[in-house]
Length: 555
Image (tube, rainbow, N blue to C red; front, side):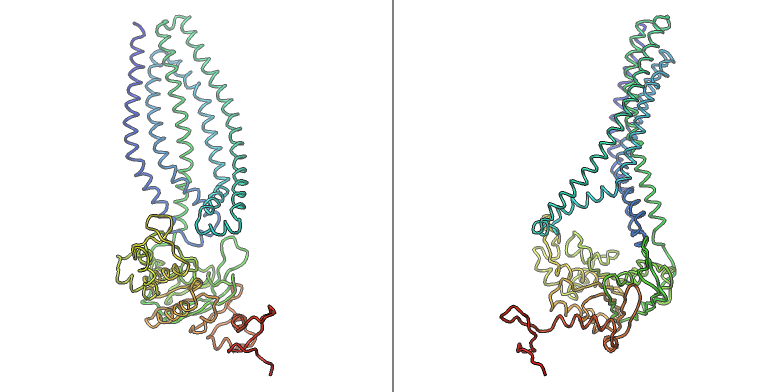
């Protein structure tokens, strides 16, 4: 009879804990996806605003990688928070019962849990530190496994036997991760051994206190029995609290990575606002412009002076690594000069409204994105800030000679141009290049930056593409052309020749070909020599012939 109130209290605590758990589970099911969506969107909204040069910085890239893992933890953290709250409420109620039985039992209860809590926090910290240390290693494993299933890599994997090399690399890297996991497991086992010993001693002490209270007359036998039940129930609840707190603590560390990444993205974001551009694009001018990539020992561009006039085709020529693509990105406002000034209509891009600059630029890079969307969406994404205009889409496709190709697809404009999905279809490299050209044209920008726009096209399509680019200048569009096909640069209004980041020659094709020993002339003659007409003779040699197929004779 003396134990009935205490037993009733224990039963009430158990029932209330169960009800609270059910209610909180339902609530978390409603909140978790919403919170995950909002926080993930905030992260990626920040990422897409980061300066391109900052993304080249390994430290920034690493921090954003860590922040991406943090977005995965947000949802789990909410669930852990609710479980911690449930366990805490149940524990407080159970501790209240123990306090009514004897205040000393509450102290003993927390002494039982303290070693486990220490162990949980230490293990969580180890896991977090390990994940940070090996974050790039994990990324490399992810890249390798993606390549193994990537359709674009499938042919070479099979023909070259590259698959075996990649699988072996995956196995080696995974073994390294296994050793790290084994190290963590050994450390955790040692920590848990110490924690279990401490908790065991504390539990022994708790039952010792009960024994002393019982033999000393401080607690009736019936109440002592109830106290044993309460201690066991409370210990289990406290252990659950410790485990859930461990998860919460670990997820909170990853949430801190998310927060740090959001702050970092904001710090490196492209500034909003700025000086307005004065009217339509008339010229882009570089004055002693230099640029060095983060961590690079030498400048990618060094004191470059040049002008890009409106309504012209301006070609950038030079060997790989000469600075052509870097210069194009500077002109497009993607990079800011390290030294010197880059002026759009007289406005320094450092001070200009960068969104206004981007609004006047269209890009067709050599490795432009192949969006896993419909053919229509792949064109419309060129000006996705505006409402879809099918007439403009079709006009852009006509200008890029892509209409016949698109209408021949299984579902026309609604064809999903990615393999591996229902209604998906695979495009060739040349077809993608036409689709990319349509996307750039749909943008109707004042400056069109094209990097090797015909690398996957057949000769006839290549000629038509360069003619179409030239035709754009009649409407005032400025074309900045990067290509190694110097036959295409012959019709450019202005050619700039770069070498090791320096501007070494400039002029028209005729002017540059007149420079004896000139760099451009040398490159052009090397390419022209490749097109010398040759036919095989019967002996396996290749002899020069005249234009009609007859062997040339010496004069």
